[in-house]
Every structure is written in C-alpha cells, then in structure tokens.
Image (tube, rainbow, N blue to C red; front, side, top):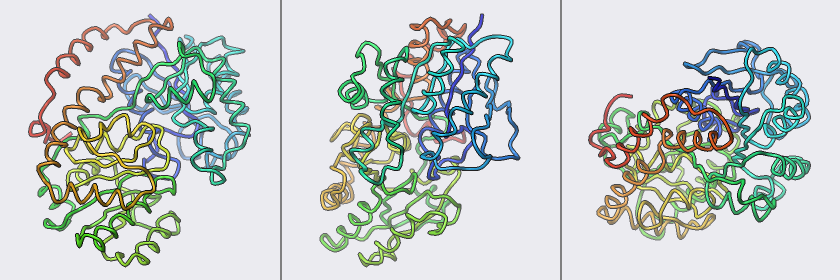
Length: 440
C-alpha cells in the first residue's frame, strides 16, 4: 500500500550541520521526524534547495528516506530572507519531479512558510493535500524583532493564504496555536499541537566529571552553558550580563561556555554576533570568564550538556526550542525565557526555571539559586528527566504525526501498532539517567 510522503523544507536541509545562522531547530526537526516516520513504515522524500554544486541532486540518505535537492536560484548558500523570489523555480522543479514518479505522494508536509507556498501552488496542479508546520510565524517574528526582521512584507499575505488553504496546521506549542488563531484567524479545528522532540539515543546523561575530562574542562569550575545558533534574537547578551551580575552583585565566579557559530573555531568574522558578544564581555569585565567554543558536531553535544551545572537559553522569541529538551534529557538543570515553546517544555519550578527575556538581573537570581542550592537543582533534574521521556521523544512525536496523517486519509503504516505498544511501555517506565550512559 502506498505510504509515500513528501516533506518540503526549502532552506533547512536535514544534511546541514546544525548551529549556523540558517541551520538550527528546523533542520533537526525535519531530519528526526523523517527518520522516525520511516521507522514506522512510511517512505519519505525530503525536498530542499540545492546550495552546493558538489552535492548530488538525489541522495539516498537513510532507509526509506531520500533527500532531493531542487534548483531555486543560484547554486550557493543564500540567507533564507532572500529566497522568496526563487520559490516559483522551486515549485516548477518540484512538480516536474513528482510527475516523473511511478507512485504519487499521499500527502505533503510543508515546513516553513515558503515551503507551504510551494505546497499550495503545487496542489493546484498535482491535487495533493498538504499540512504545514511553520516553525516561526511572520507576524510574531515582526512583533518581537521589529526592523531587524529582514523578511519581505509579502510573507504575511502568503501565510494568511496558505493557512486558509491548508488541510491542517501543526502548532508546536499552545502559544503557537493561539498565535495561528488570533493573528491569522485559523480555524481551531484545523490546528493540532504536536511538539518537537529529542532523540534518547543521542542525548542522555553522562557523568559530569567524565564529560569535563573528555572536553578538557576544569573539573572544579561552575559552568553555565549556552548552546545553539549565535544570532541576536537568541539573547546570549542577556546571559553574558547575568554572568557579570553573578560576579559583581553576588561574588559568584562562573565559566560561561558559548557553543555554536558558523565555524569550528569561534570566529567573529564568520559569525559577527560572536564579535559583539566578545566586546560585551570585555565591557562587563568578564572576558576571562566567557569561552566561545565554536560549532561542534551533534555527537559531542551531550558531553557539553552533561558537563554544565546549568543550561541557559533566554531568546526574545522562540517558536519551540529544542535545546532545552536536549539539556533536560542530559540531566542538566535548565533556566529558560518565558516565551513560545520554552514555557511549554519547561514547567516553571518543576522541571526547570523560567525568567522574562532581556532581564539579566532576574536571570542572575535564578542562577544563584541553582548554584547555591544543589538539592533544588537535583530535584529539577530528576523531574525534568521524567518529563521529557514521557512527553517529548521523537518517537512519541512521530506517532502523533502519523495519527494526524491517518486522520487526513493517509494509510496507516504496517508496524505502527507494535510501535505504539512499545512506546507506551517505555513512557510508563522511563529509563533513569544511570541506564542512559551508553554510547549511541
């Protein structure tokens, strides 16, 4: 039986290295969702923009998953804010590819508004239903970022159109659902909340001393970790100022590790935001307490999470935020901004702590609490581990997504029932951190 799906992710390839300016949560989400849907029995083709001439147009990536690169503008990396004029070419090449296939796709799952535009225009020709996960909404982004938002104003009308025409919408969190309904007049019956997740075979707790030894970090320092894309909206300046406040107001010296960027070495030329943050650290008098690590492969990130005393993420705007889940899965207490999906994945005072964005003094207070009261940090850690294993594994996300597909008429995969029983058992009995310290 045909269980073929087309996932469109025009700027966020599953093959890209996460951590760059345009390579972050969406890349990870598309890659993980596709892999777990394939394990349930679907055949997946992921369509993304062709950016590198030395990359094959069709890549057999994983079992039952192909990545198809479609030409859309020059074959080079472009900021996603400049891609909209090239979407008609992307659409034409998508339609041409689909017409050459022996079997049609049962459904298109579009990721981001430009992918949704491709799906909507292709539907007029191919008559394939589509669902959308936006990952970020233009109107919310404009509210939070103002003039620093460089997307064209056409984005708003496109989002309004595709929301009206889509067969269904996937919201990543309750705030995302509310924004779709209140800002875009989306039909509440067409919106289902399905979050992003984490992979427990990739992120799990490792002994802190071991992790620090492997990373050549001081075993005795109090380490605060910031990990992810190095762009202004992530609010890393807020974390730098909080670390400064810890030192000046409370006399607490900590080491801030900043992991991410466009290169393996922290380079302010390739990642200008690093230069701005380095200057801020100098102004605050803590340049010697802030270490910019650079980009790291995902198979190393669990060691950084496990090495830290606290993980911090305080963006101005975050549609979901995968890094807090990864940190919690590694047994690291988390302090996050009370925005978007972060306030959904972190239960304040239970699985982590929440603070307003752009409030370094309040962030410093929360960090002081966790540093000076290890029992509180340990309690948050234990509850967070149970929370993420119960609610946010990618397998759980894939099952919720498959249920939505079935609701829209896509055939149920043959091994879905067995997988459901397996995941229900694992959710009733989540593995403790001590059983997760293994090599993935």
